[in-house]
Amino acid sequence: MSFQAQLVMIAWLPIVFYLFTIFPPRKAVIVSFIGGLLFLPERAGFALPLIPDYKGMVATCYGIVLAIIFYDSQRLRDFKPGWLDIPMLIWCICPVFSSITNGLGAYDGINEAITQTVTWGLPYFLGRLYLNNLAGLRELAINVLKGGLIYVPLCIYEGRMSPQIHNIFYGYYPHPSGISQAYRLGGYRPMVFMQHGLMVGMWMMMVTLVGVWLWKAKTIQRLWNIPIKWLVIVYMGTFIWCRSTGTYGYLLYGLVILFAAKWLRTSLPLLLLIVGISYYLYASATGTFNTEGIVSFTADTIDPERAQSLEFRFHNEDILAEHAREKLVFGWGGWGRNRVYEENWHGVFEDIAITDSLWILAFGINGLVGLVSLTASLVLPVIGFCLSGYPAKTWFEPKIAPAAVLAVALLLFMLDSLLNHMFNPVFPLISGGLSGLVLKKIGKLKANSNGKFRTHRSLN
Image (cartoon, rainbow, N blue to C red; front, side, top):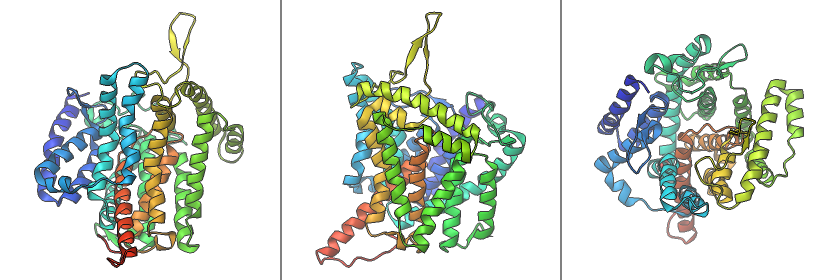
């Protein structure tokens, strides 16, 4: 961690407070969140006693929560939890039981639960507070496009010159491996200020998906006085330039979901993806998933190199899942106990399996309870959105389109989590916003069924 990185982390807290003095609270939350995601240094911060270290998006969440207490505390007092919050609550507290059942003690479990709560729970909670209506999700979607536009020239530069921007500004590379994993398809995958090129690829995929849908739905016509149709071309070109081949497929399927809703008035492709994700997690967790067909198909139709990468991941996950099933309910807890070690000929124990994906980490560390609660916290808001008065036939309406495309992006993040562990706090933020929207909509529908109110769609 360099001096300039430390300086930026120190300055970030007053910057967040300043944003709350010049913007309304909701916009201040969104700008702080996206600004921190796009520009804060990786692997930099300060150790704090008893609570997670002040670094990265954790620092952003700390700053936002403190600013809310100072400038918008009434919002905290008005918050009411709902049934859709239960999966995230379980995901945040299950480390306590993982530690206790493995003899690591309640103190260790509470520390791990606090870390999980700050990392996942705070972004979700901020979404519940400020993005729980169509207007809030629209504002988030528009700011995603603005953040994506800011990243365009940075991605273009790094795709040509190699990922150097983080090193130029902060004096070191964002990923411990440097740029050794960045060369792809005859060029470089941009990393900019994010931890890995895969994370940038996923970000630009979401930006492009949001741009296409808001353009086609006529939600916005111009952004910073630039016609949105031209921006979509720029987003698409930059996204392809990011050379993250897996996200190419995510974008394609996301567009299939959205245009099936527009032309066929059905959410069937989205529901099929939910079923597919659920089946994969069930089969992989129980050890019954057959990976040979997928590897062969990838090698024959996409790319042999990608097939080898998939085969390597599947092999490692088979080893880790078998180990995880020994502690099925609450997992192995922390301290690397979820990993599998083997003694080499020097008598040293080596890690023989790499944990690449988020799902295998959740399963190994927090068991079935952790895996189910994490999955439910990301998937249930999407299902609720489809079933609570926002069916596929409404997704092309200008007011509803931002919420619809963010719901699809959230599900695509869950899909990516089957293969990678590229945590992006924007997605639990979206999950919290969708959960709040669904809970409000269900409340209105129930009230209408009792003859008390007339159900109507609005931005609020």
